[in-house]
Length: 266
Image (cartoon, rainbow, N blue to C red; front, side):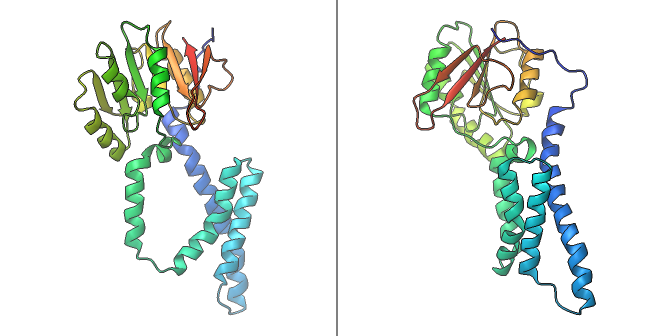
């Protein structure tokens, strides 16, 4: 049986901590821009020459890569920092109306809000995962199932349809996916579809909690599980294990992405 860590009294608020990470990356990119421009503008200004933007953009990318490496950022953040300024310069040459960028940003925010606010991208659980969860929870006669970050309801809707005797709840905070899930679950009486933040969702009322998030929030979510879920209940994480905690059970799902379910008995 896995053991829950004692909640830390000085732990920072999880939503604030996850939001701070993208802001730190933005600050790193801004530092690279300031470092390069603070040298390039005076140099070319004294010479009376126009700033060479292609070279400047690649210099910013190089400095951003250096800063990301020195600050031990994950490899994919290093790549993003290296290519951001050169890509921005290249797109600027296309002279696209700024309104299109605003529209694209709004559409992406409607679908991928979780990626911005908590580094939680949108994942779709497979049908095979639904079958695995149905088998795993088959023995629960008073099943109260919660899906944190429920997307479009790809887990709770089919499970609720197959188990009319049980109660299922999905929580989602991205507007477009929440709306899709709301429409999808309207006809399922035992499925409650909620708009909300997973960090502000009380877990005490549920005996099975499922999440398909990302590696970033797992440690903080496990602390929340320890504080709120009752002894004997079950926490299931799709693909992302709780760091430093041995799972009670691991289930390999026979789907195209080789899904693994990490099960933790509280």
